[in-house]
Image 1: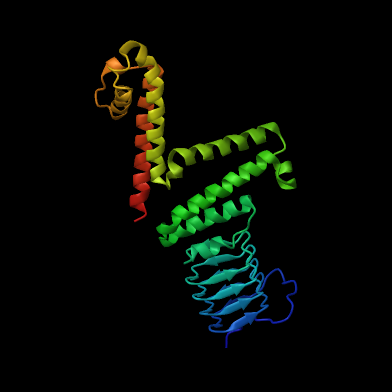
Image 2 (image 1 turned 45 degrees about the vertical axis):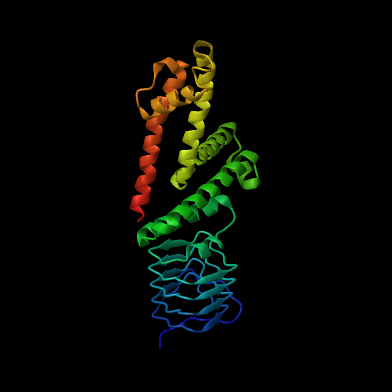
Length: 287
């Protein structure tokens, strides 16, 4: 019978290295206070197993089968999982700090709920989960993970600017460090407003339309003294000129306004075309 290395007493400090535990079968069982720290678990069958107060910290788990398993108050600090199946697994109050997944089948919403709250650690974990999703072909989860990563990055740079705690006060103590954090934070905000970081296509259309309307209104004040209210059709012709210029549909130069507005509209045309192609590529590649 394979050595299962299951302990039910209080965990003690594990030795630096432990022999590999191979082909362990704990399916349909309840495991309490098992100490698997610094262990190498190979081919662990834990189908519908309940783990309570177990410690997998700094362990390496390969080919683990955790389908429909339940984890309560378990620690996975620094653990590495390779080719594991966590489909339909549930996690309650578990610690996944610095844990890594490679080619693992995961319930992403379950894992997200257990990720550390610290934004810098959370962002690294989300980057790993994105790589894992790409490896397993779970493209449906990439959008959610990307938005979660951006949110963590936004909080990270916000904490850096505010000197949220000792970590941020020490790491971002200089003016230039705070300036870089502020620049990154502004870039994230701008990317979210313009196109939702490529994950919210409707924002791309909304930002484009709103910006063109604003430029048309700006041009209107230049056109009105020359054309007049009636001939400009209450500003409609100014708006039509901007739209035609944006679409390169031979706008009527009689309704041209400020020259710098024309340059902005032409520049917007190429920027938004590039962003649209990027969104379209993401959509197609994730099918």
